[in-house]
Image (cartoon, rainbow, N blue to C red; front, side, top):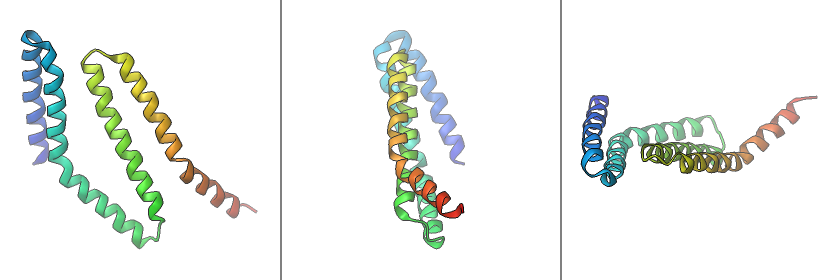
Length: 128
């Protein structure tokens, strides 16, 4: 039961962060980052399995592996930016959080251009 470990680490981290905010507020952000890294490490095996499964299905369906790799990178960017935005908001820096959100959205859009182009080309070929 991975979820019990994740929830347990989250709740314990929450208590530690609340205590740190009372006595040493400058260390609360470090506890939050550490909790996020620990939770990420716990789910890394599951994430690796998911990536392998997607690659296996893509190779069986003869999907271009370049597009699958791009989708994985885009998903990784989305997860990392969400993590960074949450950390910024927790530390009271919502202005920086919004800039990270904007930057990550622009990066994701720019990375998705080859996929969008390929889809449009396919649509043009299908239409008479």
